[in-house]
Image (tube, rainbow, N blue to C red):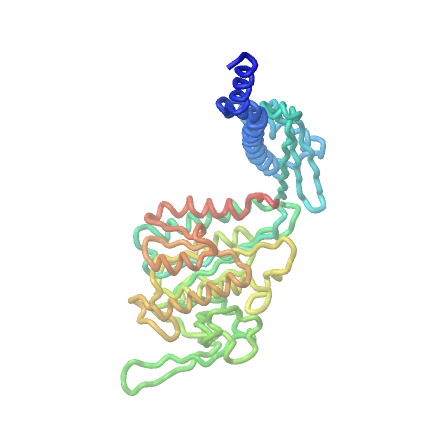
Length: 427
């Protein structure tokens, strides 16, 4: 082979040889691959910065709403900027740019828009040296009107293990917290009702002329010859039993027919006349604590009637009219339902000592009706009782509390009171 042929042979081999192509292609792809990786890393960093910014401005929004009543707009804005920066992690403080604060004193809201700029790393190769990060939060200060019904088991078992003593202390702690949370410039911003219950509730006897009461309940002798006596206004000690089914699981809303009216009844060992009376919604803090002090443990358990009368105190129509309509702007209605035992007796079922599934069924219906009406329910089981029934009665499972010792009642009531009365984010 001559030199020219050899040269042609070598050129042909070079042209056909594919060894080293992968390295060449990798070299060509290296720059965009690094760019993609850099973008992913930087956007992950930006996501972390946004989470830190969210937490910082949420905290700042709550503090701003708390202090907005005492500070000028300029003072609130200055504090918000400092609060946001102080609450950011050390590596994020230098990336914080500013916070725009909008204060609406008519609506009593504080809106914060916070901005940060994060220096990029590899992404700057693609021409972007900073990423803008922002977050928004809004809070409102204590302008919600609150109506709260305390539906409290006053049955005989509450005398055991210091439960009634602990309940009184816990209820008074809650009342104190709610009183302190009240805005003095907003009349009746927070009002509370108290509904002690056993198998019946007891009303003030001054209500005996009310149009929604009916007078046909009887008590009969246990020995022959049997005689029956019908309740009268003069003999009435304030006891009221369940309404006719299915009205027994809902609010009366006026109660204009015999079936919808509330039956005045005789008091007995299952609900004695010494039981504390229902106190309608009020912001008379002294009256509330006095009614708590009047509670005594006696009688058997009918959770349904307690829940229904709790709802009655939160409804603007008869039998009580102190409540505001549910459609009232910024109105929140709550119920705390506490019991230490199983349902044992209502107007139709149960013997007053053994658990009654039939009464449980009425309680379930009552709880569902109350929640449908827009009332938020907290339930507390004190040592004994139907845990599933009470858990399902609560608006959410987190609003159900299991108490294994009476000493736990006060911390639970304080926690619920703080949750109800605190400034909440409205974003």
